[in-house]
Each structure stands twice: as C-alpha cells, then as structure tokens.
Length: 346
Image (tube, rainbow, N blue to C red; front, side, top):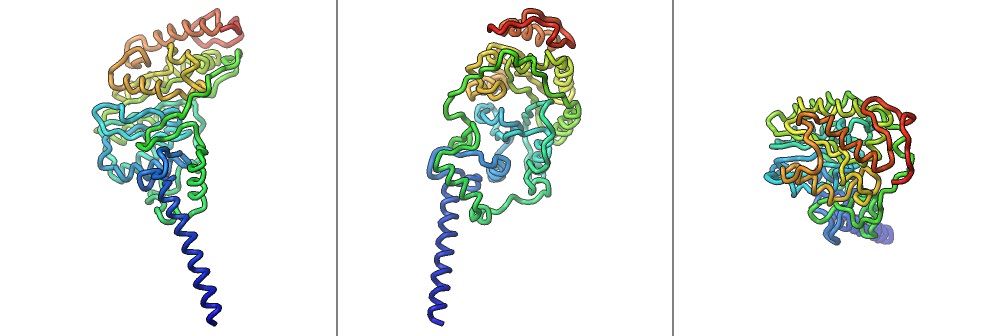
C-alpha cells in the first residue's frame, strides 16, 4: 500500500512538474499574446493572428480609438504612425471583408467605439472559409482561457518555434506588436508574360459588405484604401478586360466612406521591384508612406478617389508604366492581350 501511495505521489508530482513547466514556458514566450508578448526575446510571431490580436486588443479596448482592418499586406502598417489617434492594427493573413465584419461586430459588443476606422479594400479575394474565423467570434463568446490555452501542446509548439526563430510568416512583430520584415532578401521578379495570365474575377457584392461595415460605426470617421500592388498585377486586370469594372467598384466607395485612397495606381513605388517580394506584399518602408498619406503629409503616393477624373488619372499612370514594362500599344477600355505587342525587355 505504501508503495502504491509513493508511486501515486511520484506520478502526481511528475505530472504537476511537466504541466507547470509547459505553462510557465508558454507564459514567458506568450505566443498567443495574452500577457504582453514574448518576455524572453524581443520578437513575437503570428502563429494565430486572429486569436492573438483579439487577445491583445481586448486588454486595451478602452484605450483604442482607431482601428485598421486589413489582410497580410497591411500587417506591416505601423499604427503608431497614424497621428491623432491611439490606433490598433487588426490585420491578419488572408483577411477579408467578411471576416472584418464578424470581428467588428464582436468587438463592438465588447465596447469598441472608435473615432476612426481604416478598412482595406480587395474585390478579388476568394470568399473565406468559415473555419478561418475563430469559433468564439462566430458564437460571440470569450476567447479561450489563458490556462487552458497555455497547457496545450499547440501553444507549446508555438513557444518552441519562437525560441528557435521559426516564424510561420514573413511578417514578425516587435515588442510593441508592430509588424516588420526581419530582412529584405527578396526582390520581385515577375515573368515576362505575367500580365497575360488572367486575373481573378471581381466580387461586386463586397461593396454591400463594406457599406455594412461602415454603418456599424456611424459616429466614426472612415477611410477605405486599396493597398499597393505592382504594375504587373494592375496590368493583369487591364489585359483581362476588368480594370474598368475594378475602378468603378472602387469609385462607388465614395458614397460610403469619408475618405477613399487607391494605392494600386501605378507609380514609381509600385514599379520598383525592390519595394516588394511578390508584387502584393510591400515592405514596411512603403507602408510608412501610406501612413503619411493618411495623415495628409504627402500626395505623391496613392490617389484620392474622390477627385474629379480619378479614372482618367489612373489610366494616364497605367499607360506610362505599361510602356516601361514593354507594352507598346495602349487603348483604354475592355481590351485583351492579343491586341497588344509586347517586349520582354524591361
């Protein structure tokens, strides 16, 4: 009997020691951002940005008076550069308006009352799988608890990978949870025929969802923006014959949002392949310029969609930069690639 009791005590102590060690390691690394982030290193990884950013935001909800809703391309936008507000960047990988709306409704019920909202616009993403939205958001419940989360094997793997420097994403977050890219090893190198490879179809129903998003915070100022994309990406819209439809959808947002900016308009910034690693994800230094545009500190990047002649100015820039990548004939309208001659020299 005494031996059984000794075995039980040893087993119980071992279990307690193992669980305590797992919890303490997870608490110290804090991969799901419950407790202020990584206490061992100076970086935080986005293993589950949707849960981690919600956990972080809920701890400071009463202090946040502006919020950015965006996808992975916007994770590197430093919210501290938005002047006049205590801004939070709620951007996450493959984020879409359907998700932004679900998160906004959830957070509003918990006290989010922003003075200004910033909403990334994308009309060509595929509709998100419902499993990408955390279950607690869909069911309007509190996030998973700290203890149960940090006794889990998944969280332990996140912590170990953090200590090993194995980020699941290109974007890493510093000790203040500002997204950055640790290095800039990649330069975008699109194939010569990239603009001829077609483009994803547009989803005009997104306008209705964006309107619902705007109406969710009727007292807040609102800004919608099309994120920077390369001239090669814009060229695919043009060659596929859907650029007019795209610009019309963007222009329609003028009746919904107070401000609308389009950073996809071809420019030196989106032509320079050193500024991006894939033509859609731009380095933080480019998003610093986006923040300056939001602050009305610069006008040479992005275009104010409300101005007269928005489409004309867009096509004017498009023609200029298409010529730089070898498109030697240009005509506005629903044109297809076979109507153009193309040089592979650029």
